[in-house]
Length: 303
Image (cartoon, rainbow, N blue to C red; front, side, top):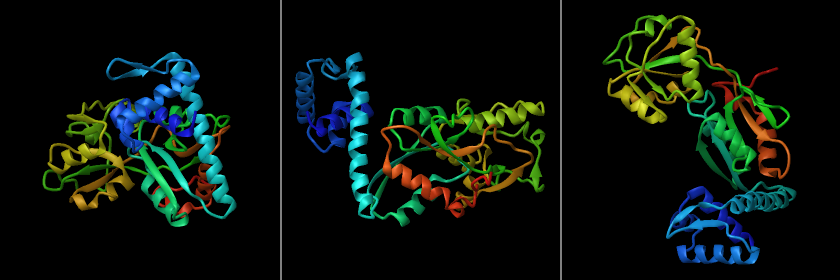
C-alpha cells in the first residue's frame, strides 16, 4: 500500500468517475484502475462496485475511504508542519463557502496569499449543512457558513457582523426614488431568488412572512450568476447582501437598501476541532482572527 493508492481512492469518491479521477491524479485510467485493484488485493476486500463503470463504494470501501482521508490529511499535515518549522506555509487550504456570504471568500484568499505566497487554495460553494458535514469528513479545512445550531464543542468559531440586505435592479427597467424600501413594497415586484433550501433565501422568506408578504419568485436558482444575469436582462429584481451588490457594480445595476432586512443566523468562519488537524488551517484561522480589516464589508463581531 502507498499514499498514491489512497489518493486515487479519494479522487474516485470526489469525481464519481474513473476517467475524471485519473485525470485529476495525472495518470491514465488503466493505471488508476490497476492500482485500485492492487489495493483491493492487498487488503483482501472489494472496495469499489464496478460494472464497466463506477457504481459506488461497497460498505467496506466506505470504511476504508474514511481511513484514507484521515491518513492523507495526516500526511499533508506532516509536510505542512515541517514547512512551518522552517518558517514557511505550503500546501492547499480547502475552503467551503455559502453563496451570497456577507464576507467575500476571495477577500480571505487574497489576504492569505499575500501573507503566504506558497499557499494554494481550493474554494467550493455549498450550503451550510454540506460544509459542516464536509468538515467532519475532513474534506474541507475551513468553512464560511451560517452559525445556526453550530456547536462550539466541535468547531472553532469566528463570527462576523451582518450587512444590510439590498434590492438589486436594472435602472432601465425599474426606478426607486426612496432611500430604503419596506418589505411590503416588494410584494408585487418580480423577484429572482435563491432556491428555498439556501439559508439566505430562508431569511428573505421569514422577513416577508413577519410582515404578511407572500411574493412567489418568478425565477429560482442555486446560482448567483444566473440571478444576476436575469436582473441584467430586466426579467426581475433580486435581494442580496450589500457587499455582493457592490462587487457587481460593473454590470450597470443599481440597488436600494431593504429596511430591517435580517439574516436568521450570523455568518462566520469555522474550523473543525479534533484530529487529524491541519497545521495550515490552524495558522490561517489564527491569522484571520487578528486581521479584522479584510472583513470591512462585514466585519468580525467584537464580542
